[in-house]
Image (cartoon, rainbow, N blue to C red; front, side):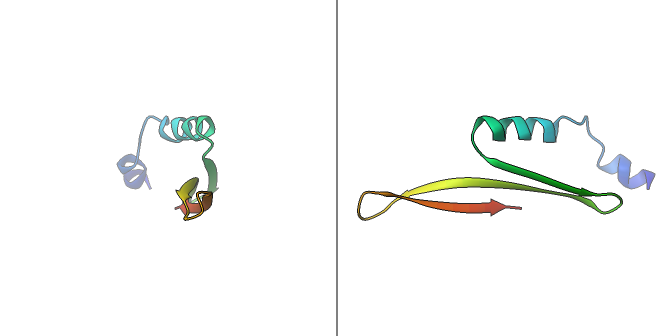
Length: 64
């Protein structure tokens, strides 16, 4: 639909810049796209929390 395409039209740099940033910062990046359905972008961050014993606990979160 031309109206929907125009509403969400951009210059095409957003995902490219996001991917490069993720690569540089060791952030997981996954892209799944279906024709006439949409695109799902998932970023996976590693978060370190200092535990009681002084060791780091690795907590992985997916941001959809």
